[in-house]
View (cartoon, rainbow, N blue to C red):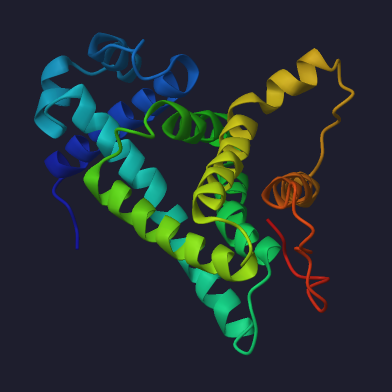
Length: 232
């Protein structure tokens, strides 16, 4: 359906505001950025922000919803695929974790020149807004965690639910920290950390989180036949 020229102009203003806000929040955090900062960056006025979003918090919510919807959808699809693949057995923990982590890095790779902005913004969503997510995102996260916990409980039957909940929490922390601070790692190590590609970074996170999930346990996370699968 064709849009009238006035509607196109309005959409462009909204897009500029969202792009500017995402960049500023990514770089400086949610608390440090004012509406005036956003409108200056977007060459817009405060009235435009009020018109499209109402408040700064509502603008943040829309950005988070926009960023998280494809992520949650991809995660649930990969969990569906995993359960279909292992219909007659337990889905290995590393395959479950892959389904949670891979979509974030895949989306990151698709961002092109905005890769760094997207990376930092999503990292801040995880580290700064985790207890204040928009209702649709919180509900999606609760569905994901419920399903993830059930599948990991099957894969790690000897682990107490409380311990498992904390270890899953730590795994998400690994992802958030990696998104936020990959450049810092290269700087503080003076390049010793290298510039690994997508699959290498993914595999290193899998290895670390798999070991953390299984810490203090004699259970073997890697089941026979699971070699060659895409991991977390």
